[in-house]
Length: 192
Image (cartoon, rainbow, N blue to C red; front, side, top):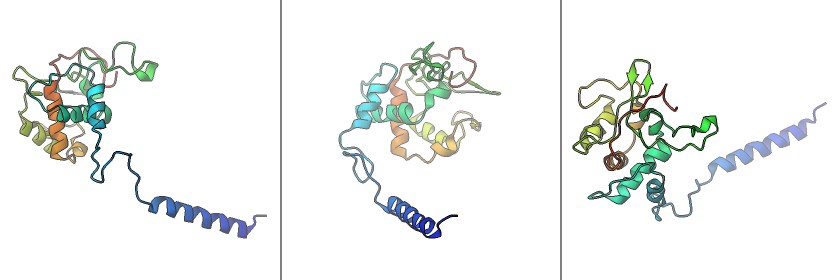
């Protein structure tokens, strides 16, 4: 037989603990400011450290490029869809590899999603990612319509990415402007 007083007491403790846990002030990292920025620049430093390709920083804002790399490589998972293949041969982490991103075809597109093929978002001959100006890039992400020909980006997760602020989208653009041009490789699909 269940002791109802014991069950009631356990429920009170559980509900009270849950309320206390969720009612507290969210904790911040040691160097994080209330606005979410990081006084040490560690996101920028991390972004610069994890870029899988050499960066051309000449004439570019280093902090903006670093933040863009952080957003693309640590948060956005852009290489999974825009690199074909995503991982250096033998390094697919889902098959026991270390997850090293393939630098040869990095962000050069070519991954198939049914009838759709991911775009090459590396800089063109003029240095613009996918041939977009910063404004065209932001408009494409905000609307889901390719700024070149207005087709709808059915596979691109623009409905989520459009919620990013202009500062973050500009940082991504700055990063994409700093990577080398690449051509797609051959792969069977995204994340390979």
